[in-house]
Length: 83
Image (cartoon, rainbow, N blue to C red):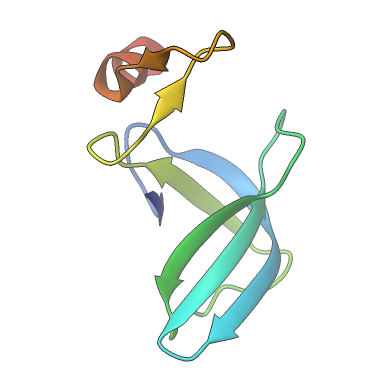
């Protein structure tokens, strides 16, 4: 679960695409150092536009994080290390 807004784990990125799909919207965000866009699902009434700067955070309670060897990493521990 990715969130737009402030938070301990929030990273600044730039909106590249907004898909308005009725009650939901998918916001595609380019983050520095990340090769692919990250997608956040939001309520359909979001006002973000292409080119906007947004904060994108991860809710550790819902995150599934894996190491390069495929082993699961506890997301709460990971967030404490990067904060």
